[in-house]
Length: 138
Image (cartoon, rainbow, N blue to C red; front, side, top):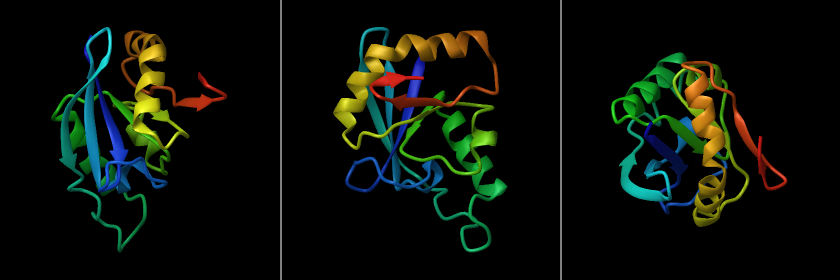
């Protein structure tokens, strides 16, 4: 099974302290069973959908889901997830991180990727939220 990650970042390519759907762009990585490989950078074209009407709208959540499903992403990595997490985890494994440094996060995920593989193998939907806590992925 291929693992494809979307990292929620700002325009400078850094993790931002905002919800996944509010990211400026997504850095797309694949794990090739040994390491993370950078694939692409995509603009979050759904960032402002319905934001003037309702924060965390279902319309925006579905737009983000469809956008990332089209490119076969199956893991989302962010410093925050909002109220659409219940929609998101039906399609993706969400990973909540605390480190702002992308390289540190990549190294950490490479060491713990077996836990994400396991989650995707045993479930088809309603994935658990993984959190990085005290250097451990839970």
